[in-house]
Image (cartoon, rainbow over all chains, first blue to last red):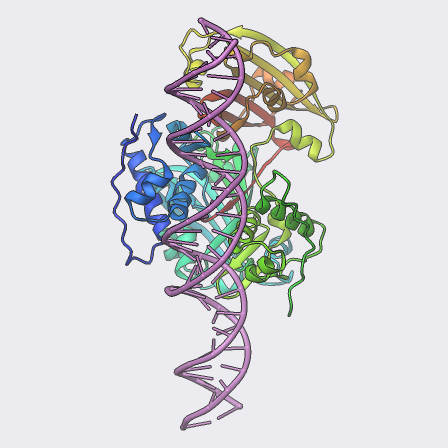
Length: 246
Length: 246
DNA sequence: GTCAAGACTTTGTCAGGACATTTGTACGTC
DNA sequence: GACGTACAAATGTCCTGACAAAGTCTTGAC
């Protein structure tokens, strides 16, 4: 059976790398359902010559999809489209953006915005203990339902972040506008019962537990940019991720 | 400042790819503390010529470490060793192996092992609704403290898995011995209060919540191999992961 | 002494080719 | 008909070479 040739338009003038242009167009082709799960995928050599790209370039694009769990490669057989159940990837994205992607309407209220000293947070951010950090406490609603309580500590260079900015966009968008791009993050996920104030802030019912997430994010230079301690209403939120062997 | 030249021995006769041999030796050099965080890393071109490898091969090895958060690359500047806080990676590993890695002593008791029909589980495994699946319910202790309740559904081809095997090793080890190698998995993490029987099985105190993890694992061919619904004592367990941008 | 232009260093992207390894299939042979 | 070999097809590994882009550092003009 001949594999379907996916329509792709490559713009060599664009600053976007060719492999990424290709990967994005292949991704959307699969998401649109042009290829069904189990369908064979055009082989690397054929696709390279059809698109007048080199094989390494095509290969790297395909690898991006394999990493996301959309394609499965098998030496000697070919590449096939994976089950759509796996088609998602845990990414370094913010809750705000995730909600927008899902078509929901997030709303953020800043409860606290102040400069504090906190030995534990400063230590995590690799700063002296007595450094004045920007401490934020926000509550996030989705479609008017309280969803999460977001607590963050930021280095003093971000002390000029305003309440208005934060109610408008996610923290990561604000950071990026200031040229700080979180590149890697370590997350730890757990669960516990809420404190009394958390229960009030999220209007939780009795015996409703919280999903907790603490995150330390680093920029490309490897210096810490943000420490977060977030709690989510467990009944309204799950964390999805795709794992592979490698 | 000249970057330290890490001692590496490459065996071209080995079936292990050169880039992976290199990546492993670089990894252990960093773990052993030969290079401290922030230290400059030997540049790609120099390392390639020193080891008489091509630059793409060296580059691919370095990329493995970057993916694990051990190194940070910066165009025009060089590559540096990242903060050791990030040096872990969420992998497709089993709880059993994780505990052994941490030096703890897991013990597994099989509570149930039976053939059942379950429409939901069969659907997830892409099998007909009335297929007889192997249903397992296990409780796992670490150092004699109850930690997790593990529920799994497996396709009928694994119906010969015995209770003895399962009490001896993790499920994934048993599957691999049978030639089934889980390659990708989708996980969903949440939290909730335990049911009465869960509270008994894990001897939970009042108001102690559970961390829930449901997982659907696929083999290299893309067919489902295992469905799991696991619950963990939240006070004794957290899930750690490293995320990067890419 | 300060600042800007340019040289240099280092990683990022892309091409094209060669060979190895694995899988599936077609064809014989027994 | 069963088994094994030979071949084809596809991905996996590795190489050489070249240029682009970003950051750093030196040099020189003012």
